[in-house]
Length: 279
Image (cartoon, rainbow, N blue to C red; front, side, top):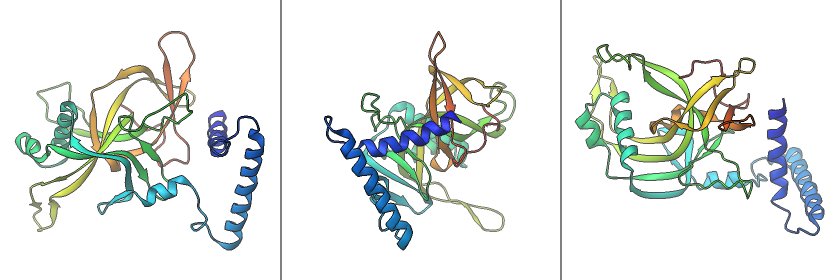
């Protein structure tokens, strides 16, 4: 209950605080802001002008976003740059292609171009989350910016990874991590059809999330909330952006010893419940 109340209050206070320009008389600006918001909302409700009078920054940002036909519910936002990938990221992309598509190692290496598009934010449309890539979008505790880079996501895990002699058996699981950036490139995948002549694989534009996975310590027995120790992470992983479940917040654990964080998601978020299987 505290987390839910704190989230709503924090968002509203942040919305008001941006209008306060005077340190000497801050309450005059805040009062004017509250009055103007109330008047604007009253007009929107009375005359059904929800879209026309939506003055939020996120709406304008989404209008200038980059959309892809095969990702209809997602847009990526600036900052944007075009350049090479780090070696570890490139290797993670190759591993993703091997697990996801019908290609061998040599084909996977050839499919990844030398340079790709790098995007700093990804926005899930129609009321979804807006997530920032930690590599490209800075977080400042001093300026009270939100660290909106930690996510809940799905990925494929080999159940027999510890037994090399057994065949690969992939299982879809829930995991947590920090989004570093989103990359976009055209993959010239080989064309494959099934016995009925239907295309099951073809060249496509891929939108992939580069993630730093978190190693979870345990889950709260009462709330089911996962915990992790700060700095305890796994090697970089790449997934399709569609496999991102939702944005999560972090709550510090003030016990003695190495700093630990609890990961919390809103109940109305687009993610699954914490009771699903974790890595």
